[in-house]
Image (tube, rainbow, N blue to C red):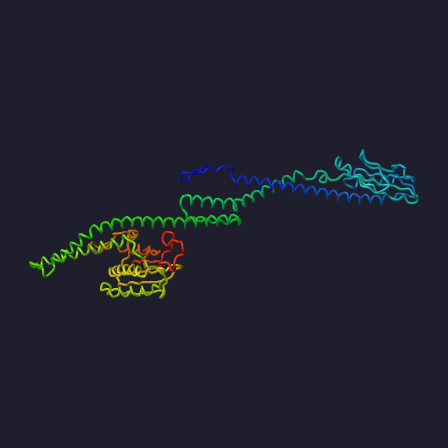
Length: 512
């Protein structure tokens, strides 16, 4: 199997883990079941043989007691002993021969057969004077020979022995090996099915979930998370995968944010160079034009101008001043001013800015209020912060007047972790989502021609970012229904060697 992602090709070879696990499990289970079954059968057969031998010994001992009663005055009643042997042979299942032997007074005397019933084994050992159990023929004929001595009353030194030859049961001789094999095979199949289910649930299913997660990450879905509910090791593997995707997603966001900032910086640099050149080339002619206009408007000038001529010159003067104002803004946008950044409390700056806003004639119909923390530590330049807030406040007041309800502007100050935030909200119509990504571009404006240059927000964002902060427009409407601009500044001085702009961690969106 070959997989290709981009220009790289990864070749994956090998047998299926499912087949290998099932085969290994099958071999282990079959060997275990068969081994246990045969062991149990062997032990059971041996125990059964011992019990049967004990039963035969007890039976032979009882026959010996009955046979001892057939001796009278030291002489054996042969007919009575044969009758007893025949009865024992006929009444006892598995008994193939019953014999009675007598020994003389001498130790070396041979045994003399007194009575016999049945057919004894041809290779049976010679009887002895002591009680014995002969099991040598178990492997070939399955016979057990039990010798039990019995007293011959009235004859000192004379001894008789009763021999019982019995056949072991078929189970003891052959055991139930076919049945054992069938049962062992059935148990192995059941255990194999159970093991396959456990492997599927505890190993293969989690691995498939991890495989799907890896495929999703390969497609670029870096926020993919997998849920593994299996053994501890696989759970740890799933948790490690989730941590990896979270780190990849975080790093991807950081790289995207850095790339966006770099593009914006390059754009600002290009526009700045162009603006600086245009401003210097246009500034001198504009200054001369304004000077000549002022000379013409001087009341002492001869000949005196008519009212219509003075009106035209006044319009020329105001429009020229407007051009000069735009050129000045271009210069402000193109150069990095000196910053007096330090640890400050922005409370005084906020109050002064709000006082200026309330004093502006264009905001007299707008209700301006401040909420939130009364103390807001920040690492910033108060003058630049005042410039940014004044621009945002004027824009908010202008938007609030365009709303349908009462015109309101609310400035909120709050602390989020190591960031100091200032939110400027208005009750205006809000910002169209289609243009939300362009409002910070230089020269982009939604006002009518002649009412704005489109540099205010661009300059404000540049000033905030120069202090290591961020200026953004919140996507969702504010609590007042209009737009919400958020200024974030570091609460304290950055650590030595750290960057305050491109390397900064991304911060969450401000709440409404």
